[in-house]
Each structure stands twice: as C-alpha cells, then as structure tokens.
Image (cartoon, rainbow, N blue to C red):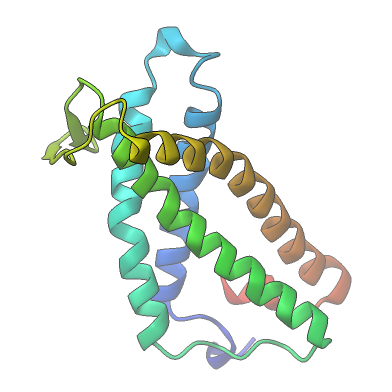
Length: 171
C-alpha cells in the first residue's frame, strides 16, 4: 500500500487515542453500577474530560488536513459511511459535554485524568439542563456502543470481504 493511500500519522494518532479513550470510558460508564465497589466514576469522568479536549482538536485536524480518498463504492455505502462518521463525531462531542454538565451538578470536584482541577459549570441538580444532559448521556452511551460496533464491523467487512485496504489505511 502506497504511503499516499494511508492516513497520515496525525490522523491515525487522533483516531487511536480517541478509540483507546472510548474503549475504556464506555464500559466504565455502562457498567459502573455493576462494579460500584471499584469506584470507577472518577476514572470515567477524568478520561471523559480528556476526550472533551481531544475531539475538538481531532475535528479541527480533520477539517484542515488532507485526507485519503474513499474507495469507489455504491452511493448508498458512501452515504452510510458519511452518516456513521458524522454520528460518531456528534456523540464524541455530546457525551463528554453532557457528562460535564451532569458532573458539575454534583458535589464531587472534577479532575482531568485525576491530575488537573477542572472547572464546574454553573448548574444545579434540579436544573432542566442537567435532566436533559442525563438523558442524552444515558441514551448516548448505548447509541455510541451500537455505532462503534457498526464502525468496527464495517472496517472488518472492508478488510475481509471487500479487501479494499480501508482498514489498513488506519493502521
């Protein structure tokens, strides 16, 4: 595979850093009640705040850095891929933002990766914004899980069935 057919190092780094964060954050959030004695929520919140910093930088990178061309495929597959990526970006922004709103209404301090104090937003537990954020965060976690599963399945389908090099471009 020619170097021009691969994503650049920066793009690949943003992708895999984001993926690593989500692979840790998502189970911590979805399973936090089941593992309550382990007190995973500080990690969930701290890594979520890291995601809140990474995703806007990743979006800016994507908008300013040349990307590789998608392989020739049907218009429906191209639109599906574009919708999948757009939905993932929306959720990658909505999840940490809604989490920040929810956590700001609580009594515990916020820390980026447990190291840096993070400011709280001016919201209280009974605020309608907090209730909306909670709904977005809870539904969004499950939706993100579904979209990520679809994203991974599509990458594997390209690699195994179509053999078009789509997966290798991100490796």
